[in-house]
Length: 311
Image 1 (tube, helix red, strand yellow):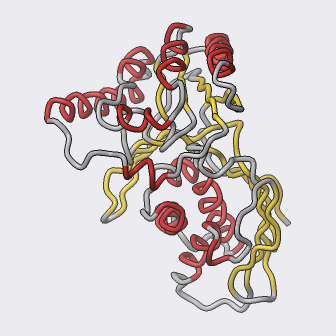
Image 2 (cartoon, rainbow, N blue to C red):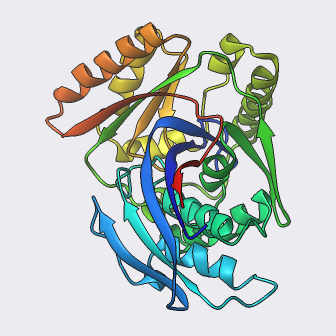
């Protein structure tokens, strides 16, 4: 195989109660990438469409992740790789734009090298793209992008990712206001200490959410979608957050929260019809702000990155 074309999906991180540890993969939102072998050693990025991003590989998250993989090869290779990126996920959206590029790059390189690395190793390499993007090698977006479904970061040193089951017929609505919330700013606003009573409630929600996924308990899943630690601070960066959340819950959503560091907001629903109602009230609520936005509806992607073509 000399060339591969992939779909690299968007993701939701944190999922309310699971700051930096929980994530899930989306079916209908994502980037496409074409990666091919080249005669030039290393990694080049020849094309990026959709968003103005650095073409110099060392300054692009796809390149940073790819170099981490190449530097870990056990045997030398006598060729390089060229990458084309077709971005549909805007950077700073909170739905895993940098993770899609980083995870997609290492997935494609691994395939073209005949799969020398495990999925866990690919997550480790993809984290280096996240380090470039936000200063921290977080895994809560790259893990679900590579593995699909829901994932839990049990440990970062050593890296240990737990794949979680999903819930049948779970739908998610997302509103993406066209403003940028930098991950670095969203992390800087967070407190370094939290009240014990809030931590206890948060631990209870994380445990309940994991149990709900294992038992296919959609109501318990919704009851667990509460964030007592991060959301009160980050919501200040997102116009009309409270209004959108209230309207979504009134329309039947199981829960509503901030996707990643924002500004996108997500709402889970137990049916497609409810998800459409939630999307409608999200749209109606945000029209009042006069801020441009995008609305998405998706199911959970159980596969992760998908191969579209190879030759």
